[in-house]
Structure formats: structure tokens, C-alpha cells
Image (cartoon, rainbow, N blue to C red; front, side):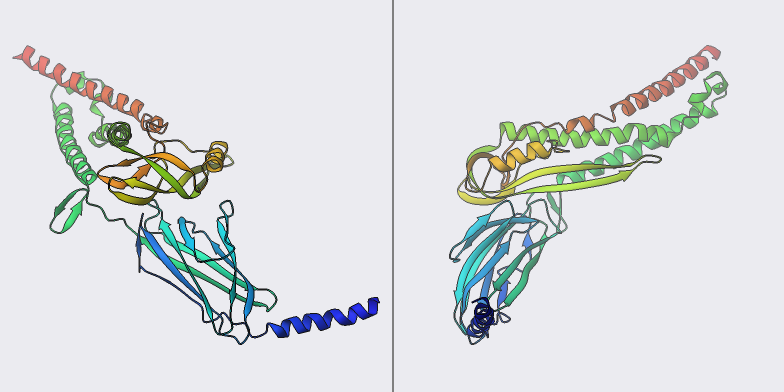
Length: 371
């Protein structure tokens, strides 16, 4: 009996292979409706699975992997569709006749945080019995999102932050010129030997840096605080449906002298959302304003990802001036602590400025006494 089975099994396998021989997916195509996708924009991908062989491909497995720098927000026309958000993939089973084709399409949303990166998705097609397979991928560059913020000068658009930066540079330059002339007057004064030696050795550039660098940090923190305040006071609330989710994990490694290498991990959830932004139905991505701390937050991040699944409806808040700017968590986060770190430097710089001011007043009093 065992000998008979041993003779029949190779025959059955050979017959099955010959029955489905000639399956060929090589002429399948993948195309999109855009040449480049701006950050925060949806692109449609059209897939044509063509069986150019002479035998029908029954029970063909199709697998679509979600993009790393974006979201899968729609997929249809696939029978027996199964979606796995944890593995970030969709699987289906299709039948493709000999010389025929099977078509489907899906929409990808480029993350608003991934400009200048690539939006890509992998597509795998398998007919295991015929040993036929197709491995292909869709890839498109994510360009910068279009914006109406700022002022147009000579055909170029300048963001308001550019004017703040320009003002900071101009103020720093004027402050340096003024401080250098003042310190030079102190050093060259005939009575300068009556002053402490540390005042005469103060460098103008170093003193300006002690003031301007902390002020730059405080300006950035003030800008973030203003944005967080707007989310609490001016942004509109809406109900959003979660279309897809991802967790952005960034790991930074550094090695200090004489110490072991230290690694810090930032885990940030991000969601693709569909909501009503004023009179328009919006599809955009977001989570918070960027001031929340996600360093090492694996437990918190996992709780958020497990609780907010695709299809769930949650409240969101969007900017009425730009409805694509959306968050599901608003308010002030813990990142402001980092913008307070330069305060001791600013305090030290103010002390040095007081020393210079005191020295100038002392020299003025000496001149009045002599006269």
C-alpha cells in the first residue's frame, strides 16, 4: 500500500502542475494618477494583474503592503479581502482567466511629516500550485505641500518664520556692533585699570551669543506655545473616522567619551483621518501639535495604537485657515521643558551685561569727579 502511494503522489503532483502550467504575470502593470504627490495628498494606484499564459490562475493570492511613509486609506475590487493593521498589509484571493486580467485600485495618503521622502507600497502575487509569482512595487516621491501662508515677493513665497529669523539676525548684528563699541570704549578709557580684570576681558561676540542663542530657543518655544493655544481657542472640532494608523519610530544613538553608547527612541503615533473640515470632506494625517513627549513611550504608544483602530470615530480639531492641519490631541505638551534649558545661560549673560553697564557708570562717575 505504501509503495502504491509513493507511486501515485508524484503522478498527482505532476498532473496538477501541468493542469495549471502556463500562468504568466509578467505583463501586469502598476500606475498612478500623479507623477509626484505633495505631502498630505491622496494618490490613486491602479493595478492590472494580467495572466498572459494559456492556463487560468485560480486561487491567486494577492498581498498589498502598507506604505512606510504614508497610509492606505482605500482599497476595493478585491474579493475575500482581509486587512491586518498590525502587520500593515491587505490580502485577497482572485481568479484570473487565461489571457485575462484582474483590476483593482487603492488610495495612499502621503504623511504630512514625510516631505522629500518616498511613498511606496509592495504588491505580491502568488500562484503556488503553478509556481508563478509577481513581486512589484509602487514608488513615488513626496514633494512639499502647497501653502498659502506668508508673503509673496518677486514670485517667491516667504513664510512668516523667515521674517522672524531675519529680524533676529538684524537685531543680533546691531547688538554686536553696539556691544563691541561699548567694550572697546571701556578698555581704552584712561581709568580702565580701576575696573575688575574680568570686565576688560569680556569678548563682544561671546557676550552677544550668551544673549541671542537662548532668545532663539525662547522664540521657537513661544511659536509652539502660540500654536498650542490656538488649538484650544480657535481650532474647530469635528468627528473623524480613522482610516489607517502607523507608529513612527526613530532611534538615535550616541557614544560619549569613556562611556557606553546611549540610545534614545522616540515613538510617535500618527493617524489617517476622514472628517468634515468646514464645507469640505477632508482626508489628512496627524496626531498632536508636536509638543508632546514620546521618548521611550512604548507602553503609552501601544495603548494608543491598540485603542484607536481603523474604522473608529474619534474627536479631532482642525485649523479653520488650513483644514488639512488636524490633531486628535491638543494643548500644551511636555516638550517645553527643553526650551527652558537655556534660561541659566540667559541669566549668566544678563549678569555680564550688568557688569558692563556698571563699569560704564563707574567710568562716567570718575570723569565727572575729575572735571
